[in-house]
Image (tube, rainbow, N blue to C red; front, top):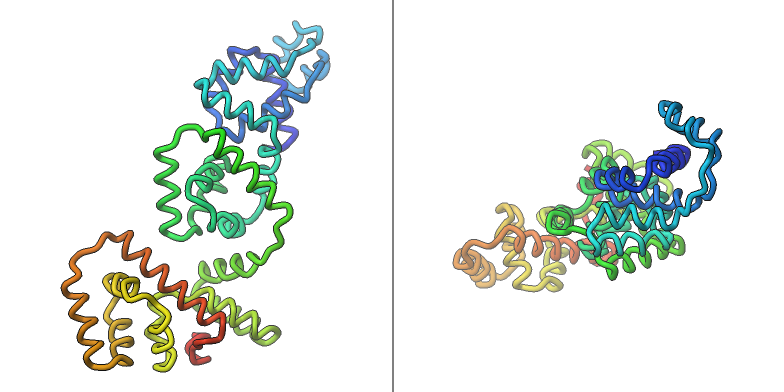
Length: 322
């Protein structure tokens, strides 16, 4: 909703009264209530002419107004208290006194991949609060590009939550305030995420173009895009380097959900006895929850990306560009 639309809606609610406003608030998202509430607090006196211009289809009702002076602070407090539970009303009224609504408005205009990059390192509870207060189309796009495990945790918290607590709203305010002072080292994270959403051919072509002007950047972007299955493409010496830096338990759990290519590639650079022991351990490990396997693969992939970014390992140039 545009700012002009917010102001018109706020004026309409003030004209309709507290009961009608409370009924409307019940069907709005917390972000919409916050935006309307901020606009309503700033309105002092609404002359009849303005009411007529804003309400349009309500000219007949507005014509009965000679203009009205509104105690917008009291009006808004009462409407929210009637619409919501006491705890939720208190939390939202506290939020209306802060800068969160305006900051969320600004955040919603950023590309979904950029928002996801900003949120990725935050706890799922905070991500859920932000997602719940973004416009639905933006929220859905952000969820789509979050890592699978983060997305699942966020949806779980959304499903189990009602209203954000006062502590969580304070965390939200702090996080939003930090965005203004944050400089984007996350720019590369956003670029890597977008490359990951592109087709394989388009991503490879884009990286080749970047390579011509900034080989170091192209190398870092490739490193950020690496996943656990890419281990099978590593040269033998680099597979040994990886094995020295990954935890045995993490590797075992990650391999449990992997195809045979990674297992064979790693076994090929181990001693025969170590390779046989690893295969035996996998056979006796038994079934693992998918979330546990995914966590192990994420951790192992993180080790792979770190080693690649540090230059400790590398991929053959023709395979990286493929």
